[in-house]
Length: 169
Image (cartoon, rainbow, N blue to C red; front, side, top):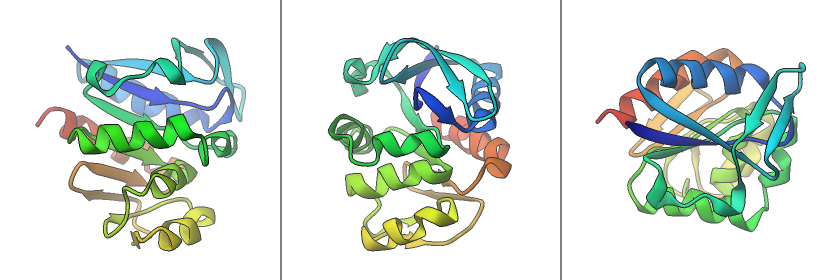
């Protein structure tokens, strides 16, 4: 069974950007592991409760088939986090699906992997993508090689299906 890791803020992550992709991937026979800055209960912006299975520092590309950075206001804790930026680079360099939804695209931009790539992000992150060399499209979902980005919670299902397709290649 393939395995993907969701990097999720410990609080104020965007609920539907977590649970919709998680359900679609699990329904597609993908095991989803959640990682955050702590283990145990984490809480979304609208009160959704999830469980972080592991801490960020313990995530290794060799243990997973892909990575998803979940958006929401709390995601800013990862924008300059050396471990999060390193993980984005590792998964990308290993040719594995490296995905972000909403404002989490700023993590991919700050990691340097979006340089010269088509990408989208929540509008508040547009300048960060452009500053880091991305070709910002504003589309709901953008796929460029093994990078998959989405701009908003409204694109969660489309995003999840793109990730599922990439994992099954």
